[in-house]
Image (cartoon, rainbow, N blue to C red; front, side, top):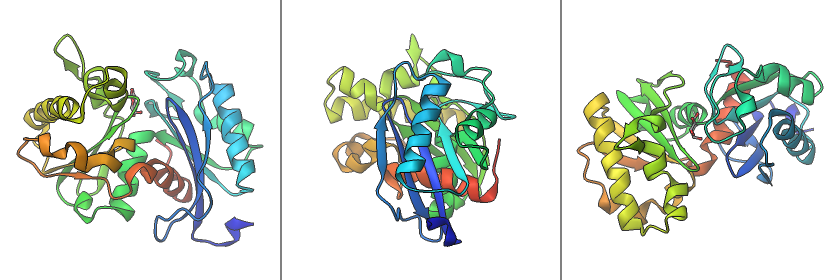
Length: 254
Ligand code: BGC
């Protein structure tokens, strides 16, 4: 049905807690179906997750190409890391996996933060296209998309930057705020420290913050002291779904 409209695509965003999918109008970035969401199965093995993706596609009655984000490095069709999903993803051919579970249809599979970066450049913040931009997704982990004049350097994984005796995402992700019951002030200061570190290492012109907590940006952005402008992603938490759908349309496959 819906794929008769050439501007429509389908994106799925696989996260540590939920798997979300929707039909996207790729000329505007609007979701034109419900946003279907199913809890991430535990253990989040490749086959269990791919079956959920299949269910979401069926719920939306979509039978065109499907773009899928994973919270992992994807290079040459192969997942090469697995920080917040089952370790059996490492070495999995993600193209073969999803195309098998989706009866051979065309799929694109890429890192979740990279997808958010691609979406924000095309349909979100105009400033995402200019200069050196670091887009960070704060969720179960911290994802990163490094952009220069709108071009993505894929798989940067800055959430794993060593930080004190831990790593950035174990100190300042959104999940850490919930787990440690931090106030927005306490947590905002942690995010600020992480941004200072990224600033010292990469000197971006701008930071863009995505992930669920970007919707609550006003509650914590006053605690940021880094010199660069920091903005909430205009596509908010839908950026991953939208970027996945763009990747499927363009046949992007890292
Ligand atoms: C993963 C990244 C992912 C990020 C956000 C990290 O733990 O290593 O690949 O982009 O979480 O989901």
